[in-house]
Image (cartoon, rainbow, N blue to C red):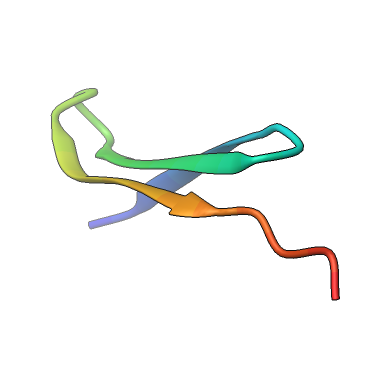
Length: 36
């Protein structure tokens, strides 16, 4: 079953969301953005 990931990157945080083909959310996470 395919899954898709989306990233919303800002200077301080990055939001990550993984969904399946039906659009159901499989995982969500917010992490610190680190440009190094």
